[in-house]
Length: 119
Ligand code: FES
Image (cartoon, rainbow, N blue to C red; front, side, top):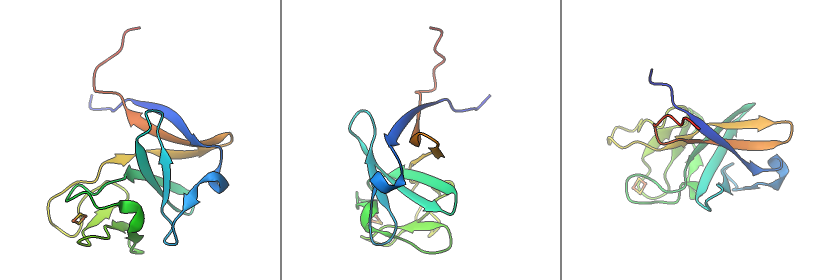
């Protein structure tokens, strides 16, 4: 119950292929062309929406605050990398994507619509 199902997509052959901003935020594209952002802390990778849920700020132009948050460059709302919670308290939620570094590339998980598939 309540377990999300993800379809995993390779978004890069490796870390070196990703373009990283000066502040350590990468941008990659999913299979449907939609862009998402990446960040990492040590071995832990994070994926999150390209646009801010508040007014569409480009999260890749934001920065990491050192307390586990990504900060939007427009109005500086903060969002937890771990769960997308709006830790500066404005009540928004940043969509997140699980990301894994595997031997053959970097993968992002995209939620599968919440319906069971039987075939
Ligand atoms: S657009 Fe991101 S905080 Fe307003």
